Image (tube, rainbow, N blue to C red; front, side, top):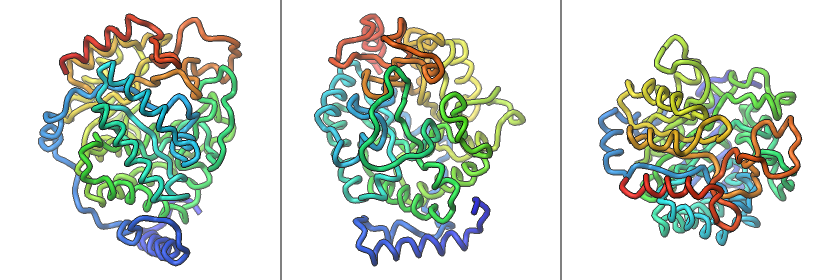
Length: 391
C-alpha cells in the first residue's frame, strides 16, 4: 500500500495503534493522549511577526551538527546500551569553549518504538547536560540520508576511511512504503513534542532533513526511484503531527537542493511544503561564500528568521572564514556539519564511497576537533571564538 489513503482511515489506524500499545503493556508515555485525530491542530503556523519576536529573544545561534564521537549513527547515540553521557558531556564542553550555543541533533523513530519512556528520559538527560554548557539543541525527527534500512541493536563498525558509512535513515524504506506504520510515526513525533512542548532548553524542531535525498553515490542502487512521492504527503503530516502537540518552539525543514529558491516556478512540491509550513526558514549550503550569501537573499523575502542547518565542506570552498562572517552579518543561525572526528568519519569526503582512501585526507572535509579535543586548524577555532564572543 502506498501513501494514498484518506484521513479517516489514518485516524482509525492511529486509534487502533494506541489501543494495541496499551493492551500489550508497551512502555509508552501518554500515548492515549498523543495519537489524536489527524484534523486536530492546537496551534497554527507562526506569523512572521511571531517568529521574529521569538528570534529576538535568542542569541545568534551558532553550533554544529552533533553526534558524539563514540556513535556511528542516531541509533548508537540514543539506544540505552550505547548512550554515552561521558562523551556527550566532554564534547559539549568543548563546543561551549568555542562559543557554540546550540547543536543540531538527530533522533530516530525506532528508538522511540523500542522504549519510548527510556528514550524520553535519555533526551531529558541530554538536555540537562546541554543546559549545563548553555547549549540549546535543535532536534531532527526524520532524515532521508544514507542507509535506507536501519535496524535496532548493535550497529556495524565503521567502514575504514568512508564518510558516514553507518548513518541511517528515519523512517527506513520499509516503513516509508507501508502506510499502516504511519500511526506509529505519528505517535513518535507527537509523543516527543508533547513531552517537551514547553521546554525552554530546546531551540526548535527540524521535522525532516533533506526529505528527497536520493543518495545516488552511496545507496542509489537500492533507493526508491519514486521516493519523493512517498515523502511529500508524510512531510506534510509530520508538520501537522508536531503542531498538534502545541510546541512553544518553532518548526522547520531545510531547503537543500534545486535552483533559485526565490522563484516560485522553480520550487519543487517538497520545497513548497517546507517554505509554507516552517515557522522559521532553514537551508543547507556547501558551496562558496557567494553561494551562501545568495541563498540567504533568496529566502529573506519570507520575512522570517533564517538558519543554515548545514554548511562547511572545505574542499568545496565552504569554510568557516568564508561563510560564518556572512551568517553573522545577516544574523542567520549557522550549524556546520561535524564536530569531533569520530565514528561517523566525516573528515573524509562524500566521494569516499567511490574513491579509495587509506589515510587522513590532505584536507578534512568536515569536523573541527580531533578526538582529543585539539583543533584540526587552530586559525579556524580562533575565528569561531572571535565571532561568537559578542552574539
